[in-house]
Each structure stands twice: as structure tokens, then as C-alpha cells.
Length: 147
Image 1 (tube, rainbow, N blue to C red):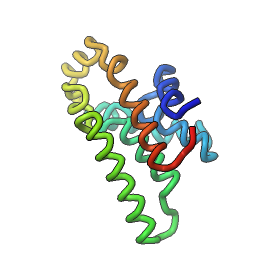
Image 2 (cartoon, helix red, strand yellow; image 1 turned 120 degrees about the vertical axis):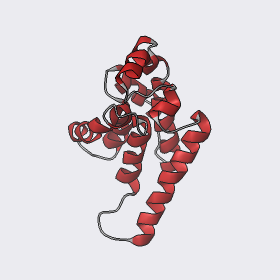
Image 3 (spheres, rainbow, N blue to C red; image 1 turned 60 degrees about the vertical axis):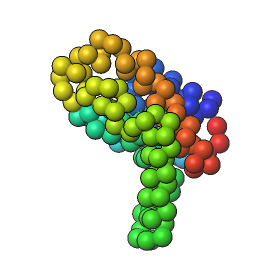
């Protein structure tokens, strides 16, 4: 199954956007799926429905860290990881116009009335699956992860 389809499938199963993007990479790189899901949980909904960075973007950045992150200090490797993170954000922004939930949805889900409007308009089901799928596909391409 492709990264894009796998991420969308997780999202359809009611995992949040960050979990949905990160889980396919956890599966491919031997990180326990249960642990990956717990790690990614607070990043959904623009960081806990705070309306910040889109969870699909956060999940993709978690994948960058999983594949290219460092565990001991190495300035060059850390800088390379940061460069990949910036490149992903640029590519996602070029594709969708923003990397934040308010910028992508046109409403701030950190504001209760606007969250209610997002739910009324069903934006989590009409727009977010595309963000999830595109984030997984883009970061997979960048990291050279095969589908």
C-alpha cells in the first residue's frame, strides 16, 4: 500500500492527522506502532486543537526525525535534518498555501465557535484527508521511502 493511501486509511479510522502521517513511517522503520501513535497524539488538530501547525505537517516532521534525526550530537547531521524539515514545509506550503490549520481550513480550530463551524462544514473529512495523503507522499519522496 502506498504511503499516501496508508496515511489516508489511518485517518479514515479516526486517527488524527499527525498519527495518520507518522504511522506508515513507524511501521516501515521498526518503531512500535502503539508508541508512534502515542507520540503523535498531541500534534493533531494543530497541536491539541490549538489551531497551530497542521498535524499532517507535524506527522511528516516526526517522520523526518525518525529517518534522519540524531541521537548524539552531530552538527552537520542536525543541520541536514533541519534542512529537510524546512524543505518539506516549503513543498507542502507550495502545494496547499499554508502549513497551519487556520491557513488551510480558513477557520481557527483553536476558537470554539470556529471549530464548530469546521465541523458543520465537514472540513475535517473533505479537506484534511488530502493534506494527510499529500504530507505522507511528499515526505516519503524526500526521504526516499519506497511505497
